[in-house]
Length: 122
Length: 107
Image (cartoon, rainbow over all chains, first blue to last red; front, side, top):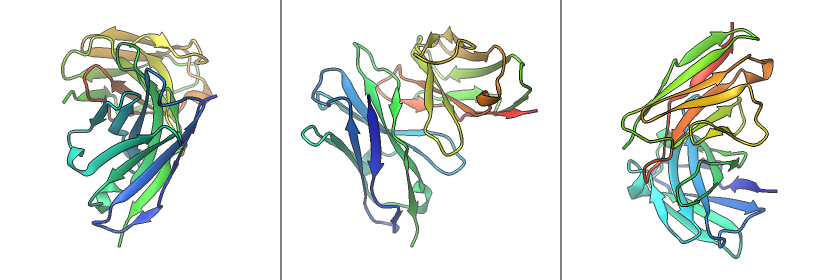
């Protein structure tokens, strides 16, 4: 049974760096074909893909946010960490992590965490 | 970047109706398209992948079709549980993009 859960601060100040952790169970990021992504959703708005990391350390970033994002994995802890620098009030959103696979081609996100709301305000 | 455009943005329908939501890609994505359902305060749920493949456990009243740049999600007979927001997502390119969502509301 695959589960994912996001954790991190609920409130950050403008210009600060946000660090979010996705802790998962039911799969391993050392297994070939496994990936974890981050997606966010501002209140009342659409989903926005942020970043993705695969078992082989292939990393992908949204072009519009690439300069601010870093995604890493810790396979021993079953965790994926996303950092976002220079936070702004427009970054206020629910942040989700989600499981995906690579089967010779990318796949959609089939398991999602519950999400964590991050508010950016002074 | 590949842009995904959904229509309509909002759809009003009644229980038992057949409804269709459209998603258009700014360039061909072959069949690398997924559909998600999201209810308020909840994470999205995968319904359809590879344009027309039904995710395990999803009711058969949901179906997807299309290839290239135009795709549809059809719900054959709306049930009360289906009123939610639906998103398409392309995963053809190295990068991922979502549509802006279609809110399905009760008429």
